[in-house]
Length: 155
Image (tube, rainbow, N blue to C red; front, side, top):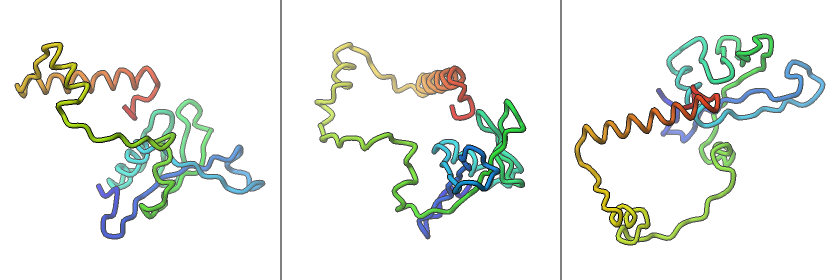
């Protein structure tokens, strides 16, 4: 999958027409960007030449270039792919609500999490089987939370 073109520093961005009535020509077109994870899922399917891709609340039909609501297939909106320059400041606007403050570098010996682990005498295990199990449990937890939030595909 080619999500980002490293030579030209461009990236595919998927958007949906967000006008109140997306099929009327009574107002200027307004386009909203899909979330980063949705964009990744959509672009991956597009690169694999699939006809459509399933997201949590809707389908994207690549041939018709529309988004179809799963609850009501009659609710459809235009969808489009646009190649954007990575330097465009709006590319990742859905990932962060505000700029995060920069944290100062701290040596690992002063890391509060590491101190907590050390003080509670919890030993990190270097056994790959145990690490694999912990990763599986974490992934399962993400899937459970995603299902509770009706975001199973994103999870």
